[in-house]
Length: 102
Length: 498
Image (tube, rainbow over all chains, first blue to last red; front, side, top):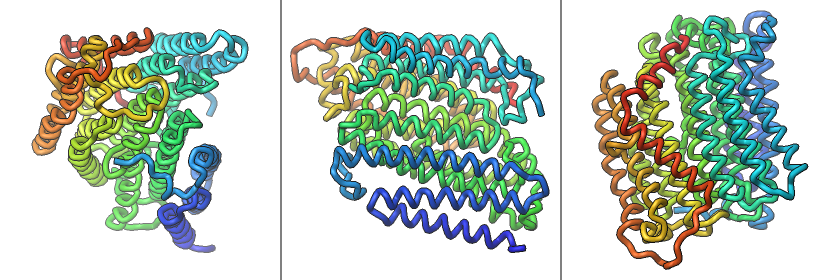
């Protein structure tokens, strides 16, 4: 069986890539995709843990299902906000959306 | 495990009422649409009242718990319900006055408020990481929608975008922390988590020695803390707050200033008191250090930034950051006294800020204002004395002046901090209270000592006056008759189930 640590490393790497994407990308679509990566990293963690814990541990898998719900809701909302931003700004490059500042 | 159906109905009576009211608002809007918004507000207020009533009447016996559902229905949950419902009712008044941000659908806004009340009432009882996370994220989603409610306003969509990106990233970080806590402890239940952290052992998946456990739990706690900091707009994760406050329609700003903070703080209280209490394990100590650091940074950063603001909403955003710093002291004490003080202060803060936002709506108009510069408040005393007085009382409460509830709340918070041996933390809080006079004074000076820019008197919508008066009266009442109130809030915490 593959050791648990491998799964955790994959999840951590995925999370790091997602964070990098959110911080470095300027296109909103890419940022939303990076957000998905973050939540998928969490899911890998949860499912791997629930597999390697005692037999009959299901709470992690249920948790992962709820994370999918959150991911879906947030992506839908993110796309909606993106459309609103596109309509009002004619751009989805985040560094050009900077009217509000000190 | 099957639960007794009557018990379930009793336990979820207020949630069911809220759900039903939400449907009623949405369906009724389809039927009565021509007659306009009054219907939605009245139904919303009625629903919130009925929900509070059923929460009080159908109290679940203390010895029965809904642990399988991840809910702990103690008196803390009840207190949170009552607080949350009343605050959301006041915000609903603001929304009516605000004409729901010039959007075709008023009903949707009222439905969002009702759902937010539902989430708060779940969150008050949530004692499971899954439930806490779901409720917090759901509250976040509601707040993002409300921020971007005026679709055609560039500022509103920008504000919603910034709020959304910040919020979802940090909540994913919190989720990552939760997943590690789950992996280390094999449970998502707060009581189980607390017991596990107490033992200092590890779950079967991660075969770590006790000394190595810190490398897992501490980063996880830091991630969780970061997520909570974002929900509360605590520094260093507060950058979204000024932009979102400024860009959002003003009644949504009032919502954002109050409800997500309420939700985050009650979840934080339960997490801290149940899973990470002081002294029980070294993780409790780490968590306390984290919270103290967060409180200090938040107070300092917020105070310094607020001094330079020229826009009322941005000023209030930074002042909200500072206020969260005070409230974090209450959590950091990890005591029931601190939590009760926090709950009380949170209520006063919420009333004061909603009152001030009501005044902002009255002064700068219904929609997302182009400018909410402080100069808009010039000579408000001559144009609308009651409005100016209400704002003054709200600001005094935020400063913590005697004779307002703010003083009692702060006093109680500081006493709780001193009891637990944080004299320097209290010192920093005092200092930032003194600094806060400087930036609140900017508004007071403009209102009372500068001539008005225009001569025409201000017409204040009736709902707005009601909301403002309610806030002012409550803030003063709590300040004048403080003796009974702390007991009330202490009672809410007393039977906290550890």
